[in-house]
Length: 66
Image (cartoon, rainbow, N blue to C red; front, side, top):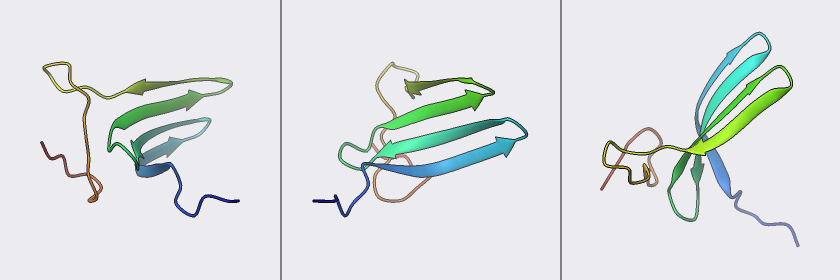
């Protein structure tokens, strides 16, 4: 059975030749992740606030709430 709601939403994306940067939001938790790719390499990491807690974005893309 196919999941009707994707697990991650892309809430920001920058593209350049051979590279991209995306901010993904987990639709279950609201936690945001930075995903980058350059050539054949890339990475994924959680975005954190200055106090070290994860950045949480709820339903509205680009808007952080506590």
